[in-house]
Image (tube, rainbow, N blue to C red; front, side, top):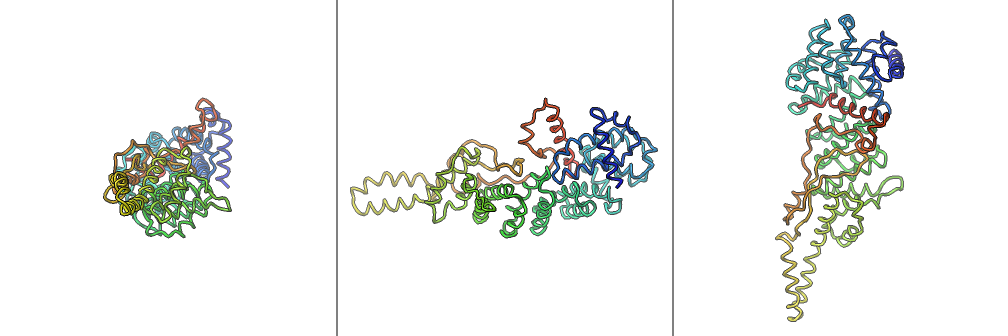
Amino acid sequence: MRGRTAIGRAVGLLLLAAGSPAAAFAQDDGLQPYQLVRSLQLVQDRIAGGDHAALPMQAKLLEMTDARLRAADAADFKDPKNFRALLVYGMSGGNPVTVKAAASRAATDPQSLAIAKGVVAYLNGRPAAAIEILKPIDPMSVPADLGAFLALVKGSLLATDEPATALTLLDEARLLSPGTLVEEAALRRSVGLAATQGDAARFALASTQYVAGYLYSPYASQFADSFVSGVIALHMSISQDKLADITSMMDPEREKVIFLRIARRAAIDGLSDLSAFASARAEQGRNGKGNQDDPRAVLYSGLSTVTSATIDDVRARLGKIDRGKLSESDRALLDAAQAVAGEVVAPVRAAAMNETEAAGPAKSDAAKPAETEAASGADAEGLPPVEGAMAEQPAPVKLADAPAAASAPPAPPMTAQAAAEAQAPAPAQPETPSVLPAPAPAAAASLDPHDPTDAAMLKARRQLDQIDQLLGAAPK
């Protein structure tokens, strides 16, 4: 009840403070820091659940909270809730200068001051110092409102050097703060860590829980990246039935795009069974609404069956694809698939020419130039040179976007092995603050920065990225 009252008052202040947070405090200077921080958390939890309309409110609450904490004195911090609120604010996208200055005015217990010191080091991009300070502090030994954030930050800081410990800390963060932005971030990071650890059961469980609770989070595109990479890495350990169970909880469009991305990665990596399954599911659709006309589904299906006994059917399907509807990198894949499909039938044609040669010397002499030309166009393995093949590059992609890769110049003639290596996906990069994708790049690109409403949305989205960076993305 008190939380609802606090957020109600905060929303009222937002309406009063159209410009400066100071105007709001002129209306109500009795609002405590912990009330503002709790209001901020409630708004962030709504965002994690998919309420993107709350983004501008989050940005304004951060401004108001920052102003209130900068004005706070030693008397304010005699209440432990206000000092904990300062630390939570810091780990929720707050200003490190504000946290450091406010902590210097507080008289509190040594452990709380140590946490403040660790948080400031973390915010200022000194992870080694932050780990050294925070590592001895057990998140389960402090109040839950602080412990959840502390577990998330520690788990992210230790992800590289101590992944098993990091997964335990992420579980603690979820236990201490279920149904919140903290749990969303902890689950999303658990998906990637479990895949790195080769823990298929943990990967499947975390993915299921994320899709069930946070599919519409503005950070869901990052989950999609980790999920697709994990499915490829753990393809020997995750059954197709389990994969289908997880995606069945998505809406049809998201499920289609996930299967398209899996099919593409699997085809490039030579995982023909997985690629065939994923492309078939993408084409199949749901509720009687198939995607047979989607050129990406046709292409990836063709990639997975390009050397099959039904090669003539595959070539016919590839030939009907509208190249104009493909990305540049997918057009290169189409070229490579058509070249391989053409070469699959080349030995049969060469054998037919040999039979013609045996039938008559005159025909044999006419056939020899063609036979020589066919032989010179293939290497010892019977595969053609692949022009324009390019490696898939990891790039921030919205869950609702088609997979795309960076372009590359045409490649010289390759052997089959070299062609496969050239198309192999680049290794997934660890999540770092410098590469966090915007929650909605396409939508953001369409906003007008000169329009007051659009400018507010752009600012809110930038703030969202900064908050996620602090919610456990360890700075270098």
